[in-house]
Structures are given as C-alpha cells and as structure tokens.
Amino acid sequence: MDDFVIGFIIGILIGISLGIAIEVALGIRQKPWSALTEEEKKNRKNAIRLGTLTLFVEIIIFVWFLLT
Image (cartoon, rainbow, N blue to C red):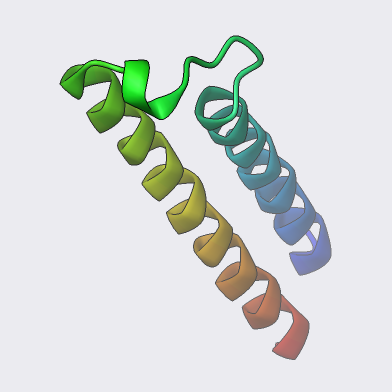
C-alpha cells in the first residue's frame, strides 16, 4: 500500500475516535459541573484527557506523514 493510503486510513480512525471522545465529553444531556458526582467528574475529566491526547497523537502522525 502507498504511504498516503496508510496515513489516510490512520487519520480516519483517529478522527473517529476523537469524535467519540468529544461526544462523550460534550454530550447533549450534560448536568452542571456542580451537580455531578465525584465519579462523573472523574469520568468527564478522563474523557477530555483522552480526547486531547488523541488530538496530539493525530497532529504528530499528520506532521510525520507530511514531512516524509
């Protein structure tokens, strides 16, 4: 397979996972932060961290494929 095709497939998969993480973090039926339990706050923080980490990995992979 061509490197571009592999990069495109990886980019699509990372984009999908990022979209899921953002939806979990910013879902439609949100409660105010003060109304969340400690477990819900922990889950929300972890979802945001996962989305941010996924975004950074995606940027690194994109730059790597762009420069090679």
